[in-house]
Length: 93
Length: 93
Image (cartoon, rainbow over all chains, first blue to last red; front, top):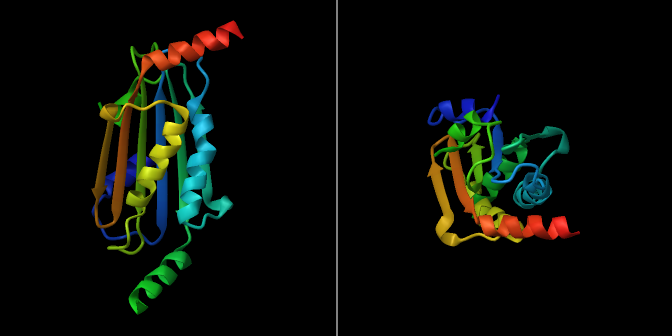
């Protein structure tokens, strides 16, 4: 399932699982320039991992380098258990 | 110009300016849950700012909270001067 299809079901009922998708596009003025996205990739994943527990097997990363535009797509399925535990903690105050 | 139109000109000639666009979508299993994107927003911008100089006036942030899906869109126009300086430094070895 790619990011765009996700947007078409914007306000339907919550899904059966939790998912985080990131799409980063770098449009260059000078072709052949060093790849900003490869640099950002690890650090952005580290930021996400600080806030939600990530199962490396549930993370799909696609880096695509074009002459004018490079894109980084990250698709993370988040563990449901994590969420229900946080919900219960919040409910018990 | 939104992120999707950017993808339609994937391999044409480099653009007249440098641009970084980020799209983050959080699909929730439980509606009304705390907003992960608002938490991630500042930290991801800080990671990007470590690698490219960002003019706050050239940064557009859109946070859209739906019941099932929230989206964060960040559109950053990067300064060209920054890039040509790095190019020259690299060329002079």
